Image (cartoon, rainbow, N blue to C red; front, top):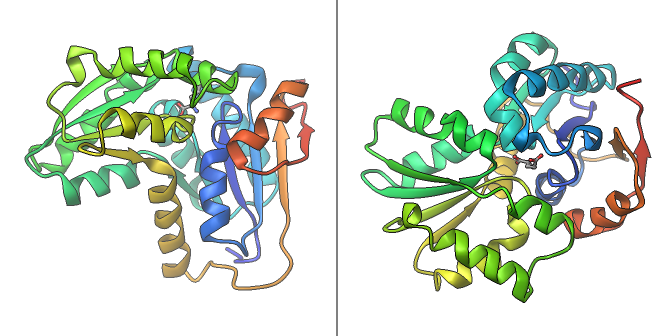
Length: 268
Ligand code: DGL
């Protein structure tokens, strides 16, 4: 594998740009190819079989772009299609998901503790976090709640206002999430409401956002395998499978800068 090659990142839409942002901040010399499958958004309500078929096609595209790493910047796709993607891609690229780095973090910091998880229906119903935590054997109890209103709410620009405050409050007050010592934000849209959620807990419960944890994991992987780009001119490309003006506008919210979204007709 060649260190000059780009890092491929994909999500169901533009939420994964929070992960792309963290990667760009930590690894500014890397080139990024981002693919948002906006034609199939939201993945959180789709079957595992549907997400697997989308994932294979997206991996094909990212391999065609010669990506050295494919980062699944979506919890729903990480829970439904990571194993398949890993087998499909084989030695052509390293496949990284957004769940395993968080599991390692939890294993280091929360042995014998009870933690909460919020995410899409697909992620929560897959039980993937619990299964991976059980494998760690660190006696970490997980309490999970599907919070399907949050991703569309954020995409519509409702965060840090009274409407989002009410919706967040009603989810966080759910009996399932009581008595936890940390809350995992198991959806790549949620970093945008991290501050509001942390405010609700009054800083007493750690709110864990996967984007920085995943970016550090990626950095370690690149360093260990001598695949990190140290200098030179790089490039970033942002593709979506369905282009609308509102997606283009929302990139600013998630990536914290305006990006040029290009329509890529993957499904035609
Ligand atoms: N960004 C996706 C995730 O992390 C959620 C959005 C969706 O349902 O497509 O699961």
